[in-house]
Image (cartoon, rainbow, N blue to C red):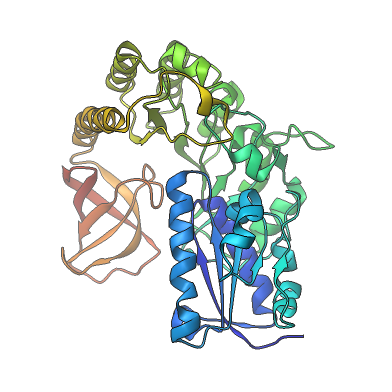
Length: 438
């Protein structure tokens, strides 16, 4: 049995991967020591993403970079986990001899025995089928907030997406397990619920429940000060959920609804539910029903068959919807997805042109949205001090970590990090706001 090895862990990809990494860290710390500098590590574990070609390329580059440390430093073993081996281990096992072991998206609980195995000079493929979570205890890598993965996998089968083939069918985590996990996180300013679609939560459980019931129970926890929702599919945003925003003081008035497009023809080709009209109606309903709600979404441009008119329909939607935060992506043609073989593939150059136009349109919307916040005061969660700007920075309720803008502010007194302060907004610049503490 191996003990007291120095282990470095690198987590790539989404916030769901972050949760997986944190559970693996807890398991590792029971026997080993975690180091932050890869050059100090005897073992490096890379938890990978494989959703897009760009994420696979990043993962491979990270693996090869760390493999060089075997020659230059004291690195003894390199282990690859997560989405990349889950989908591609048959190719990786021979193509990446630098890696000593591979584990999939549900195999983190095997990490200690795998480490023992590679020190017996065995090369290990421990990739299994996607299944339940490996426990509830975690070592947080975030400060003041935490993600809670309430489900894994997806059963929607959007035609551009590899997730069902990587992480399997949608599997809700039992509510009691989630409550126990949330209790163990300590005090968090925000508990951020994540899944491929959080609004589908509970429908597949032996004793069916739903997202609203989970929110209600999480809200009873004293250590949870606020709850944020990411990735709510539009067709599942119910009146009951909308009502919960108004009656639950812990539910942050922010919602991420990945719509992906707004042209009816493209949405049908994507196997997305709803229409551009129904999406606009949902946005208006949310804005009218929940005062001040910040709505975020994501959209894909350059999907096969996205005609000039279909693209202009998307641009028009962006102008009309006036969403608070938006992410745009170029369509990535992924082998193994239904859209891979569709006709009328869009050239990369044209995808880039359309992407730039969408960002330009949304920039106008953001400028208008942020200008309405001038002279208003918001509670800001303080995350740091910018040494170049010489001001503090943090997030308001309308800013999710890592994906939205920041609020920069001046304070004549020292401010403690990971606390809330009131900031009066003075101006906006791009996607960020500037103000002063009051």
